Length: 315
Figure (cartoon, rainbow, N blue to C red):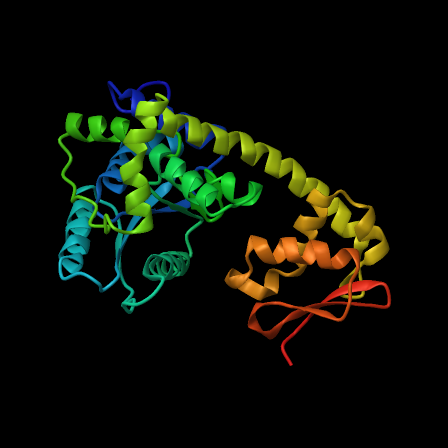
């Protein structure tokens, strides 16, 4: 071991990941860290790096793998991850999700997977998201017309989830895997899906502007910093305006529109995932001269009574 607690001759990737864990405070020594491993390149590299740098980061590693029940090969892939965990001497938990085919499949799979991983009760859940994933996420949100909340992309730490590889391009992971002779399965995601099509256009963006993926990921980091400041300002504004289960209209109207939008998003949080940016913009216009009730998804409504702004529950 060297002075960083790394094995002899550690790779540059291992050093960078260990620095990311420490700098971003992804976890503390002796915390339980479940490594979510699909068997693909990204998660296999993540597991190998975290196992080899365990003396430096001090996390108590465990491995989990999810079978969504959608492909006949997925059960065998989970078993292969279990074999890999056993070779590394790490505890392993297979998770069977049985997600039904149908609309919005990717989102439902992600939600089921995150819920199952949360259910393991670990201090942290480490996933293999990397810089290219971040760039694709930012581009996806940009195409949807997202604001700052969406364009900041993924965060390195959003407890209990963490992403130690978020600053690393896919090319660095592939080079590491080949150097270490790691075995992985190719990503079976549908190239015709929105995410697959976004991934397919990234090389074209690189041809227009070299390092487009890296630049998009960098923009996400800069926007995340700005978003954190706005969140702090929103928290203070909320404290000034919130009373009796609603927001004081007079105080609300004195806040900058950027904070008003964030306060509305917080007030309307019970609406759930069907709440869109268009609903927030509509609510901002309505609040200027509220008349009647502003209908929202799920039978809820925004109303103004006695100088307060309320979210009404379904009848």
